[in-house]
Amino acid sequence: MMSVKILGFGSNWWTRFGGDPNDACRYTRHAAFYNSAGVRCGQKIKRHWIVPGLIRFNGVGDFDPHFPSRAIGETFWCSDLAFACGGNRILFVRRTPKTAIPDQYLAVVSSDRFGIFDFDDPCWKSESTQQISVSQLRKRQEAMLLMKEGEWVRNSLGTWRLMSCPKLPLGAALQLLEDVGVD
Image 1 (tube, rainbow, N blue to C red):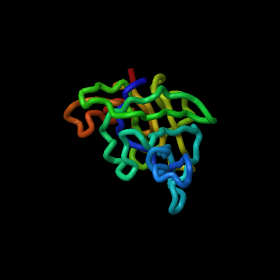
Image 2 (cartoon, rainbow, N blue to C red):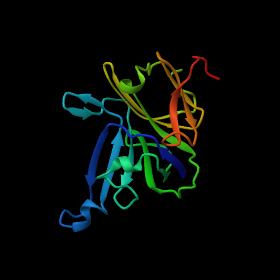
Image 3 (tube, helix red, strand yellow):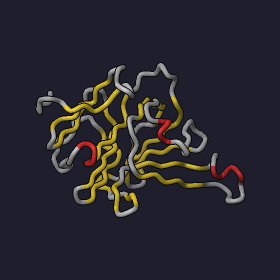
Image 4 (cartoon, helix red, strand yellow):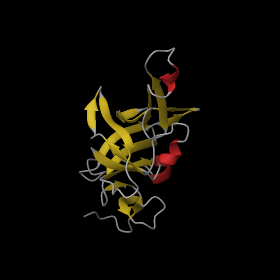
């Protein structure tokens, strides 16, 4: 298990319900809530995966699907990133104590907020940054990443490094570096 601090979510959400359709707990105990990178297509958000993957919250965990933004800035115990069923998967199990120091951060970059990325360039991200999910449709892009402090992503605007600092609203953020060079 690792601890992951959530800095943002992908645009695409969906829910799966298991168990007996007549079971009153079907919508809580047997539910799973999924999030992935997505892009807007007309009035809908769709997965146009170039790297398939998702994160999952179970209905019995510490996640409120009615208010997902309340989990932003929180740290969760998670499974390791794994490849299964044709894509990357990570399970967010439960919240850590407030004092826990995250092993990694869930960061989301999008063309709307960060500019266009060249996902075909092997140098668009630091070597140890892990892609959970990447969606792209023409010039619209979104990527969900697992990053450690100091790791970076690069695009035409420059290099964005993950910095942690208690003064930042979430305690960490991707910040555009002045110079384009990367260590």
